[in-house]
Amino acid sequence: MSLEGEIFSQDRYYHPRPDYGEKVPIQVLNFRRVFAAWSPKLKNTLYFEKAPEVPEEDGLKRVREITLLQVYDWLAGREGLIELTGPEFEQFMGVYEAFLQQSGEIQYLRQKNGRKTENLFELQVSPYIIREVKKGIFSDKL
Image (cartoon, rainbow, N blue to C red; front, side, top):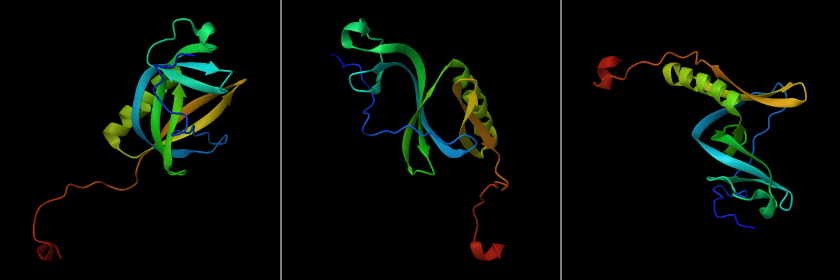
């Protein structure tokens, strides 16, 4: 089995899976387009930068192009990976752009839609007002 294109070690990352209705605060670390394939032999999903040329010979199934979102899960206190399809990534980018403009907190949740589970993201706007820090003597401000 040739796995030269594998980019993420399965031992280092985990996949956050909140219960339905539960929201997990996350911090986005990175995202990239990769190819994913299921390995029945390893009973795990493998990620590749280039699509495997002959997946059947390598024993891979369900080869697909996805966006892999690398996040920090604040509740678990560790890094994780979230696989996003095209529509899920578009919804994420809408929330992420709003986050960059308004700040706040991005929350990750999963929702059942028929037989499939969708990854959703929400922006919780911070109730605190962010002020500009001005240089000066602290005793003068008191």
